[in-house]
View 1 (cartoon, chains in turn purple, cyan):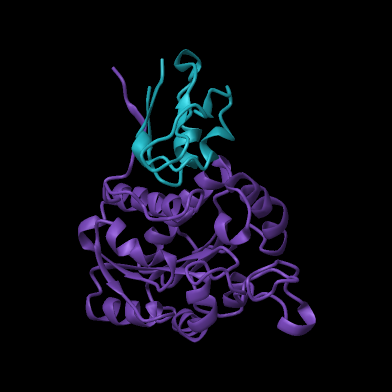
View 2: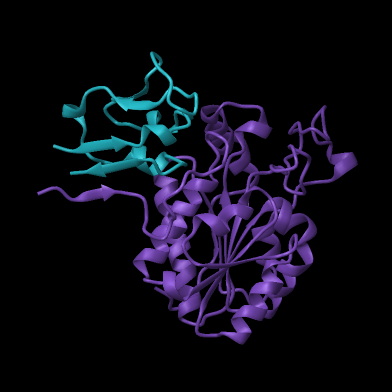
Length: 249
Length: 68
């Protein structure tokens, strides 16, 4: 008698991803799909997609989806959750979406403590538009708009979104995870599930930042990109829990 | 014995699955290309597979299935 140790989650539509080789978006869709399956949420979920590479999450996850204007996913999700409080509502956003044009929306959704879940995919660059400097680009990192590397005295220092949101009173769960090795992937999976449960229990705003790679725009091969997350990126964006819901599971 | 299946036609040859295999049996088959034009990932010696599913966990395209 064989049992499946791992197979594609039911909530992830059986179609090829359009992402580049080694891009972590697909893996993160998989983790979200597993959490949706395990909590039996697929039928009552309304997701809000971003602008950027991650936009096609509306094709890949087998849930109802809305695609928001650039950066406005938390505002749209707020409306959906308030109108239909019995549904499960998440947003899926990249760093160009959430930390650049959508900074205002995420801060105010967090400050209001909206009962939504935000999955924030941080790959330190604008992926879809061709690898320009994002607010999360590390100092010294080369991009198409910073060919000699990001200079702190010109472009400032990268925004650490978890740390910033952790200064607010209302968020219930804030955590930064990574997907560069199996141990971190398992932790990411647990944290995404915990964030989903946080909303189901009505505890308020839950936020999971996932450090992920963009080998194409980092000008690296996928394996070098894993190493770069481990050595360089996680040094500036520490992988840890910032806030956990009191008495939560 | 564990058994690993790759949906080769969807493999993009990123090689992430090859990195954390504890028994080093996952590798890219450099002798051929799949329909997408990548060297697909394969298991060289299925007998040694422990069914840990690290390869499947690492796969960003969710093309690996592991049975035990």
